Length: 568
Image (cartoon, rainbow, N blue to C red):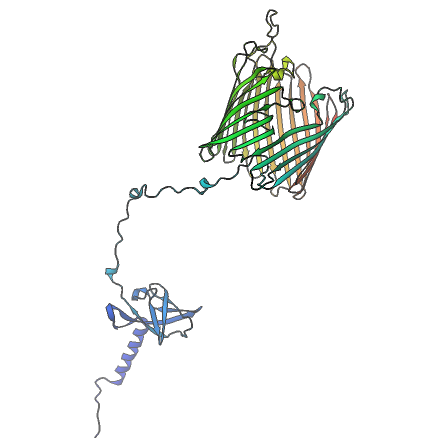
């Protein structure tokens, strides 16, 4: 018995159906029936292999997303990235080929999955929600570093030596040659790391060379030894401390003192200090306890403020020849708000009714103000000062009376006073500058006048400094014009410089000047020619030597100066 099958479609029609199914498989995704939880099976095809990864189609538009998994045979691989039309699969150790197909279970995209984000909250609602962060620098207490001096860490010492000399040799006229040599040493030490104990010794030995040196004026002011500082301090300079010995400064507005100073912080940037001791001789710096100086200083210094204020109020007096002598009160103020700087000071003095200088019992003996700004490349500055002679019976024991006041032209014979009493010197300065990377230009003006004296001075300065790109060569040029009660002059200086590597610098300068004394009828010309050499073989050694030759109507002269400093 033979089975017979009846074909409903001819063979050519079945072939066309097969080709249509294959074309649909290449051009569009093949999605199988739905799986669990509304998922669908999606057929993907490998279109490229590169770098251990396979690129497949389709992508997100068909529902294939990042982190979905695609099965190729027995291996299940993860989708690491997807775009609208394709996806990227990590191949790993799997062996795939271009055109190979795989199956993934995906959830088709739905409009229900697109959700609108809630409206953002207004910024005003979060006002005050977060406290201002505390700056890390508020909890840091760095040690202050004085300008011009190196910091010595606890347990360390620093020794700096200076060796210098100068000689002046007139080539014409009655003047005689004179020279000097000086060796200066400064030792700053904190020998014990566990104790805030600090020592400073700063002294210079000097020797003068000239004929008839003892007979020359000022021989008392050329001692063989000069001590700038010789003291010990216990305690941190920014905290509570005590210092004794020769102090470099007794207070913010006072010079050296042989005595003691105590200081303690009061909080909120305030500190209070007290000091007392003898005053060194003003001519040779030797100890002298014939006068005792005492006083107190209140200091306010707030580096955390935007204005960075620094204010000091110093009250001091002195005792000389069994009498109260100096009585002064001085106020200093400095503000540095950003790129600006403003400062000022005022000093009031009290005198006895019968003082020999005819000074008022209460006198504003000094006052001044200054300010500056840095606005990009522009530099601005101005200063004004008023000063009366510093007067005390202690100073009068070293200097003649006319050094402390201005005498009346014809004092009455029935009074002992021969001074005006309210004489003062006034000084005003202003300057403007432009500073760029290679060029700096500055223009400055100055003027001064002394009351009761025909002593006026006006001057102007124009200065230019240029550095070539590699700083190997430079040029300084300046023009100075001045006119005063003694003389009027104009001088031009041209000073090129050349750097020979990082350790050597050579400079030349030429200065022609034209001048005339007020009491003279004609002008005269003066020429100055000089050279300088600076050597810096290491960061701690600096040597320089300068020589100048000056010739003119008044005198011909050679001046030589040399200085070598070494830090150990």
